[in-house]
Image 1 (cartoon, rainbow, N blue to C red):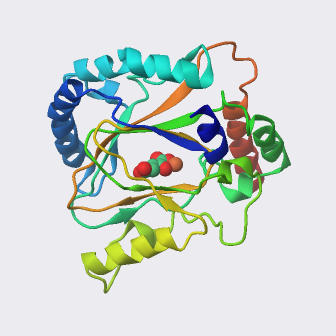
Image 2: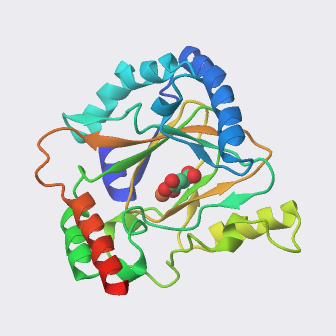
Length: 264
Ligand SMILES: O=C(O)CCC(=O)C(=O)O
Ligand SMILES: [Fe+2]
């Protein structure tokens, strides 16, 4: 499994969340999905971080998930000591939109955080430095309900360059819909096509309680439909040891600042 994670860029720990805890999580997930739509609109796709909603939700099951010995043990065996998989102040839930399909767009996390105009040599050099560093963050999708929203390009995390057809599509208004002149069914098929056309893409199917960890720099996207409930824990696996190597957040912020100064 360690080989699989390193080579493919993602790994699924099947059914690692026990049914009793899943039951408790579902009770809170139902409240959280309703709350997300109520506070952020019918098309919202996430509620995050959960710590902001301590007044409305019972966070105990999420703390139980954080403390789950099976998960802690597996993460340690996968990555070594000093990694944490659950953080109440980072964790969110990815939820289904209510009115029409929605697609986040193909991207590599990390790259997508810097606008193309700010993506200069300094940013590139820093990203190259941390690219294969397992401490540089790993994403988590843990399904409270079965779902098949995430698409990933296996092994793309190993390349710091893009192949023909690997193009970022986040931010395109068409993907966020509604698409003028298209019904929901037509939009759903359009988004599905957008997933399937990406070279090497595979659809990730998560069963209830499956925990997916993925390298954030691999190509991936999220494709959402209205008629299937989604409540997927979204968090990171974070390195808690010595942190002097980090710097990525700072380099990112400085690049944005340089861009702002140049354009003002
Ligand atoms: O919806 C998903 O599964 C993917 C979400 C994602 O890629 C992101 O939030 O960066
Ligand atoms: Fe992402």
